[in-house]
Image (tube, rainbow, N blue to C red):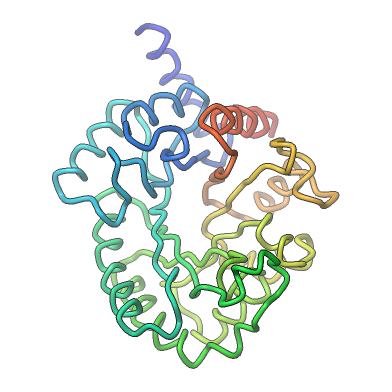
Length: 289
């Protein structure tokens, strides 16, 4: 117990020293025992959670108020916080009115959870890419062709977010219509300037869609970026980033120098052991800055 208390003391110091919080998807460590997932992540060096699943077997959109309290108790126990609500809002078919209405309603609950967990970031998406099952993320259908449905879907979501002091942070995801930063910017431009909308940058996803991540993609979204996803390459290592020449240390230095104040959040490492290795690797990287 003394060792764990010392770890918490170290963590408290590291938050101020690093300048960037380190989050991870707890469900990739343990899908059933949220307490255990948090304990292991904290021991590996994380300072926060991106809450998506693994909440005693439930997804974030499924938990009730009693389970919210259980999550809050675990966070207090390990001195960590929720840095993003990893919602699935927007991962729905553009031509299914029932799904669209369901996801708009779901966002209302995500706002309640963001407030309960004291975070402003709610991750979301821009409809499924109808070509996603081809396996070729560069087979882009053109987000412009879907804006007449996407804008009416996202407008009430973004308006509610602005009203409630949170943000719908659009992740560029190849399985969705906005897979590159350029496509994400098209969505932002169509919606107009609103504090209820921002970007969750997944550099790997952009590269998989054929985008040059830096400076091209990054320059398009950097002024409205509220969240950053970090994934491993095919060798389950940080560097180089996917099949590029980029290094995460250079990327993070750049975003910090540009005034980024959000978290780095890691996902998709392949197993609980690899996920914890990823946390340790990113912790070591941040500690060098």
